[in-house]
Image (cartoon, rainbow, N blue to C red):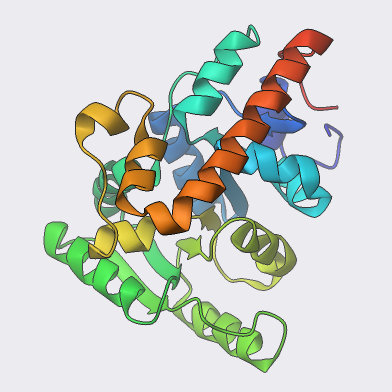
Length: 268
């Protein structure tokens, strides 16, 4: 993926070998480094697509080539799950830490407040992004959230054009797209070139957590690799089957890769 057409930052980033799990490259990046990447994108006016990978992402990417391509085309893919963290170690690689939105959004809000970065929320059910923004503004009065829009719109027609126009009018530095996986990643890939924003983040259920619509499990679970179980216990009807299928597929992928001797490598 390297080449003379890439800017110096991206060449340097690609020089750091990604950890490849199930055909998806994941960057060995820490939270403070992620903040630096985002600040650099805003300062240099270079757009960056920053996605995240967990066990569900790896399982989906194996069966959905367009989603896998979207992940591997991103500027940064960070580890968002203990399953991926443990799998990397099992494969003989190293990912420095797990960055999950429910935790990371708060230090990132403080960082953005200090640096004057503006945010935009796109996604979730009507009213949820508004509630999430209101809560963050109360917690961090200096945080500049310049707009919100729900995720219930036609992503291929005139409604999509109206959403893009509204976002571009706000000109946010950072846009969080919470449309659910893999819809959000594919939407970002299709529309990024037309969006007047420097950083695009795939935010998943971040707005639901911030708005209090979805509860998180206790810390003893979320901080010890059991967040998936906590989510299943909180929303069994919606998530039990999904997590059972995805986690089993993820385990099969990791075991097959281990047996095949394909652990840590850089993307070609």
